[in-house]
Length: 211
Image 1 (cartoon, helix red, strand yellow):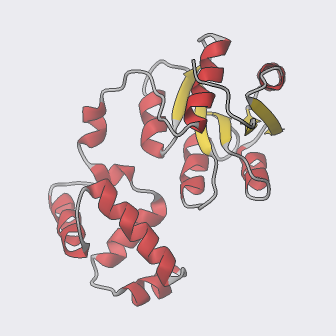
Image 2 (image 1 turned 90 degrees about the vertical axis):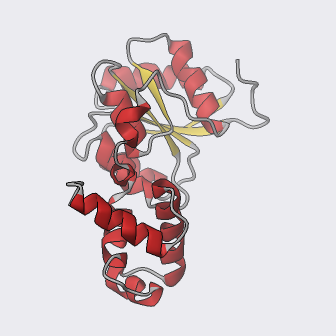
């Protein structure tokens, strides 16, 4: 069991099924560890709210209309104050692995016990990653797949030999944001500098990696 925090965790729920959304709302409202901030039936509604209102943890349906869970997670990965996301979906197939690869912090199965969802959210709020067993070897075959769309674009531009100032102009962001994204790229690719990142990029291309 995760100890109850000193103040409730601000949480938002998003599910396309109104019955599931209503049931989840009641569950979280009864648990003193959480403070339910808002709910939404769409990815766009969820995104619009968390960009305006502080939310620590978001529980999202993988099949949210219209963006979908994967795209929603990708968009929020580029936001500095985005909530940590728990995907609530079917545990069969590739969804847990895809959720982790997209950047979610946790996964809870719809077929599981209610307490499992609550515990997953509490642990995610405490900074943990919570997933069922996943064959991480599939995820490690090419770390470039773990990059967000903006990080991928940054790496491709970096491979053209652009400076940080040129990268900022090319991507329409500040130089500080460039440095932030570069740090994330280096960490995900397990490299130490831009030269190694460029070398990794080209070796991936030659090996038939993502283009």
